Image (cartoon, rainbow, N blue to C red; front, top):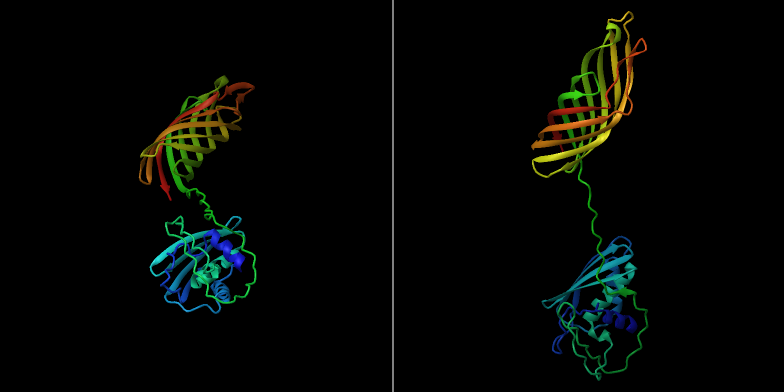
Length: 343
């Protein structure tokens, strides 16, 4: 026990936070313990049992030592925050150890030495060391001499492996904000996918964050009639679906969305003035790039966007092996509309 007491006192876990007891003052007569520890650690009853074993037969004193201990787990061990208060003097110490049981031993030793200063092991004829202020500005206690007379040799215990260092604190990881829902609609002119200039109708749904968006947008290009070879004609129309990811630049009511993705769909041509009227359907595929401006008005927003699609896969229309229509190298659209957002 002497070895254990010596190590704990050297670590500063003895009541270094309390003023040294004067010769005219008696040690505290009792203590009140508040103890909180994770599951699997010694509870308050176990700590009190260790204190009772260490302080059996101690002399009477006066006053009550208030003790509050809180044990918390961190990666690699446990930490103890121990607060002691006696006769208006309060101090706090933080300890850490790999085993939670070691912290319970240390707390019991701190309380025992405060209740019975004779456990510190100093003799009456030894010079009294000077008090050195602890890190919280309170001097270490002066050792109290033991009463004269024969003493039995205490049983030796190994000191608990306690490291006197601040408890490690794990910084909470930032979490992503929950996304909201959006619904938008718009229309505008289109050039390149069908003969001449046609109208594009847009409907989109998606998720939105403060600085990003993910959308699924459908676009319908209104029918456009065009003449073919040999006095023929056809009615052309197109429907596509695009998956888009957007970055939103700007934090105020005005922002600049920049989007990119891929678009896929199909072209349909219905023959006119043919001996055998027939329809032709073919694929459309290409990457999408979009830039725009958004004005937010609470849950409602107004937007204007310029969108370009590069033709990767497209459908040519032939009449009697002669070319009737071929899409341009891409599609260019200028759309305007509104959106509604929810969170």
